[in-house]
Image (cartoon, rainbow, N blue to C red; front, side, top):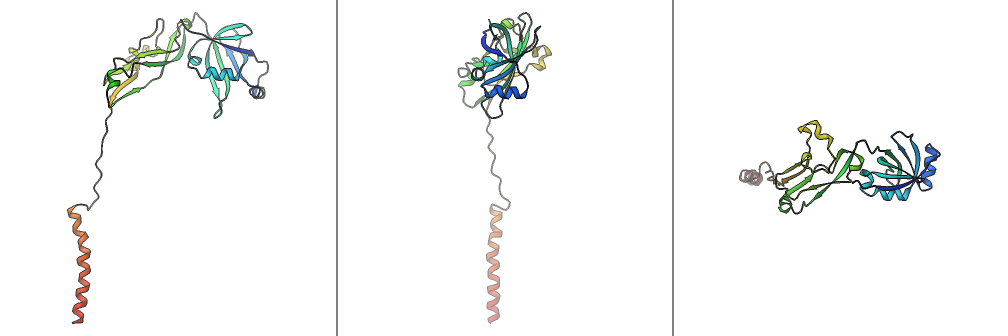
Length: 232
């Protein structure tokens, strides 16, 4: 059964950039809820409550109970806008869900028992997580907040594909319907190879290079001998 979380909101009467700026200064976040047979509704949420919720994984993948004056609607977070550098939320979009219609949403992957696996116990093995979440399709009641990926049997050279993930009942990965070429790798275990390159030998180094070094000394003695002959 999907776990739900309650988000309390208020109706927002005024719209527009100016109204949104004033709302943010008052400690609220402008938002909207849409979808289903009902008309879109402008709402507002306490900023601290929304910011705290946004720090949890479930806020992005779980069914939320949106409570507006006691009227509770099942929704999913569909968009979240943040300030470029401040710890501030600017706007939220929620979509109503029909409990009888399948939804598509990305859910996080939780990797278990990696350290206990044969690959995890070996030195010089790099275990890479190519994907950290996956898009699933299911009815709202079957939506998991996350999907576990058990890596206890992972060995050197193994590749865990999407098709290898054990999914909860009623949940599927739409990408796998497109064919085997879309069965993406999720986890790989590869040996770390360190290539040591020999330092390049400078041209002229070695025994052959020693001869030119001695030449200037011999050349320097020649003028001195010539001067000695002139004095004679």
